[in-house]
Image 1 (cartoon, rainbow, N blue to C red):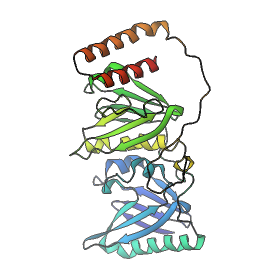
Image 2 (image 1 turned 30 degrees about the vertical axis):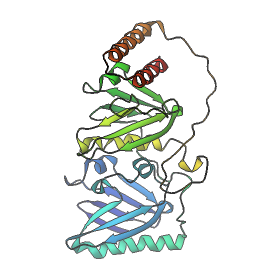
Image 3 (image 1 turned 90 degrees about the vertical axis):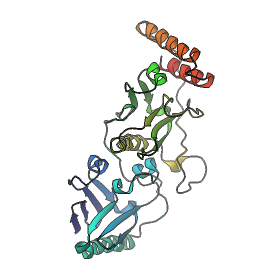
Image 4 (image 1 turned 90 degrees about the horizontal axis):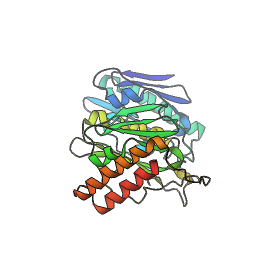
Length: 302
């Protein structure tokens, strides 16, 4: 067993799995503490390096492309401190860090782990159900559907459409950009019906606009990852799989189901929301394109 214990966290390698446990110190980012312990199978590892510095060093684990839904969902956009595959090492523990890295490298060589992109996810991502409250609303995922409940500060267009419920088979992909504190981020759920929508995140009823606490909004990556883990793997898309490309996934076809009229008790709600959208359109809040897209989204839900 090769193990290093630091205030930033613990890495333990038993020859087949790198077990990464975040530290409990207040300096450890909320995202890593919330994501929790990660068991990385050796077959998911592409390499490991220890980077010594004057006062401290860093252990970095590099995973194979396509092996981890977290890295696929975040696209390398996680802040460095929130990266769970990075460990800050005190300078007096450099020897231990080098030993752990060397043990992992030796196992990779002995087991002849391939370095090419994985054809399936080798890590499960966060467990479901998962729910995160962000600056634009609360987003939840139970393994079958995504639900977004808008906050009181959300755009009027979004609040007019009501809670957004997206079934997993309707999803094509997930797009995530963190709130940096200087620039807004977003979490967008792209469906087959909204794939060509060009609405900005603050008005898109399929997207959360991340503009508040960067520390808190970063947790939306948990939902993005949980959804990504349950979508078809990027390697299943049409064409060759190129490392670093964003996922372009094709949803499985659904059986044709005759459209059903809205339930009687929902009729008044539908009319009220359509009236609200009409007023926003007449007042100039919504452009013709925004009105058409939002109206279509409301009618689909009913």
